Image (cartoon, rainbow, N blue to C red; front, top):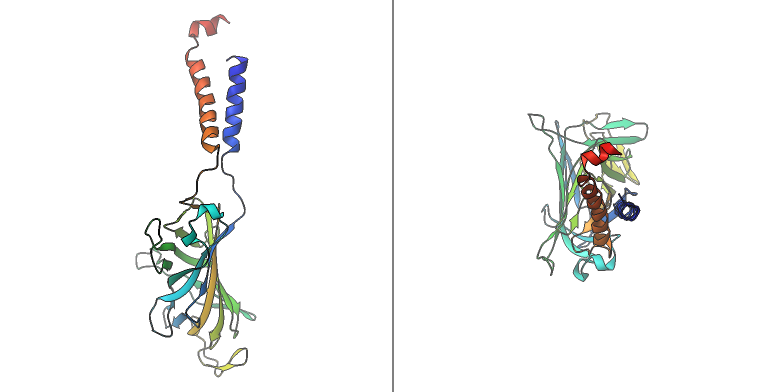
Length: 284
């Protein structure tokens, strides 16, 4: 290989590698808050062998809850105007668990996981649907989440009225995102964090309680397998590493040229080698 060809190849390969994406910190790309006047839009129902945590509109009894949904951490040029800022949307949420609640000191942990008779996990779902299709693609799927949580789950203070729900596929949990407007790396670390307040009557494993200031008090020593049934208000965020990209995003100027330059350099090296004569190589 000539000196000039070597320089061209090394330069092209260096630029190609420098343009490749690298892992970064987890980025929060979306959040939601309750709309429609708010209220306790989440409902946990405990039974003997399982418990179900789901969305429920207290005004209508429907599983569809009005929310405001925001895409975060995107440049203004990456999303059309109708997908920027708070968007009116509908939330549906549901997950079933057969994992008993655990208490330790003043805290509790309620894992959220169940499986079918054949051992296949039953995935929980969270779905955010735009009230109206967007102007560009005519789609409505802001974000759909499949998840279960055995490392995360619902955690908080016993007899209190606040708790968090977390799940992270970098742990032993399962989280997978999909959206009409975002592309996710298949190998990305995806996680979610929901916060719940004003739990009624409270977060407890006692079967018989009564409401009290700041939570509740037990009226008997009977204990449940799962958390006591409750309602609560909620909000949440969603994150991934690497961060998702917008389907509307335009590639950075020069990225295609850098890729072409690197590929050209590699091609020149392979062509040069293929033209070498075996006899010439031996005679050196």
